[in-house]
Length: 92
Image (cartoon, rainbow, N blue to C red):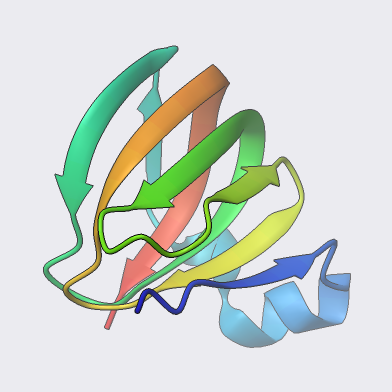
C-alpha cells in the first residue's frame, strides 16, 4: 500500500529546518506518465497541480503549489501533471 505523506502549506521555519531552498529543482510540462521511485523522495511543490495514482490500488493523491510530500521508495505510480510542475526535491 502506498504511503504518500502530504503537508499542506508548511511554515517557513519548517522549510528552513529541512533546507528546502538548497535542494535541486525539477520541472515537468503538462503530461501523463508512469514513474517508479527508486529512493525515498521529499518534495516541496513550487508551481503546478498534479495527481499521483499508485499502481497498487491505493487512493490517488492530489497536490499543488505549497505542498510538502514524501514519496516512499518503491512507489510505482502514474503522474498526471495538470498544470506545469516545478518542485524542490531531495532523495534519501
